Image (cartoon, rainbow, N blue to C red; front, top):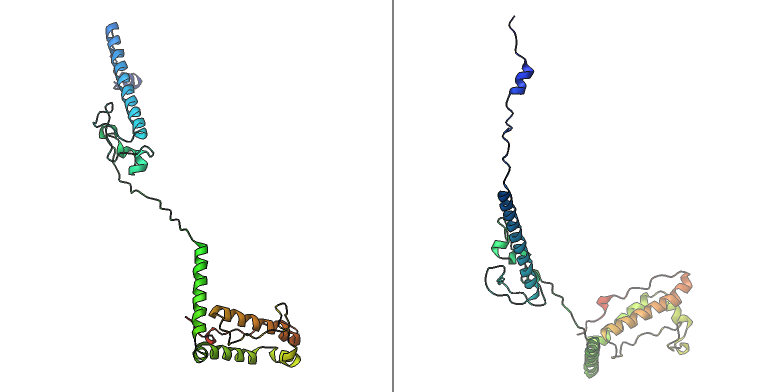
Length: 250
């Protein structure tokens, strides 16, 4: 049987790729030169950073910049910032968009950012002026109604309003009981009275369309609540005042 070699010894003798060459120590002059280069690079880098910082502070503080691309000499942004606003707030975009190309970095890509603007709309309302205008309109409408002849008034307003009152009297719960129990000569129409509802006068030209509607609604409600529920012993909604029964007024 043949003698096999020692595999462990062979494994130790196989090169691993690591260099066994020893570095030659640098001389004193070489060490000094190496340190001088490192110091020079460090100082140049610090100087460049200080110049960039100085220019950024100037950009934020001044409205106009000196021309040129030298970080120390100065440069002018595309849109000069005002003294009250920074360049980014005034011109829009990111801060890097306003730096010289050599200060942006090799892989910097400028992405346009839309400039947004907040607009606050302040509306000043003259409440007194609006009320005066409405009062003038009501007064003018009253003048126009009073200028009408009786025939014109009845045709346009009076007959329609009277027909509305007659229709409500026939349908109002409690109105018949009120008429039977309280004769006309016994009725009291003081403003404080709540048991003697006063029928709105269809001939009264002082009523505007809205005033007439409110007056009729209040009268119908008072008749129902005071005289209708007395017989029924429960509160029921008064008949609805139909809007189509009311004439249209200009």
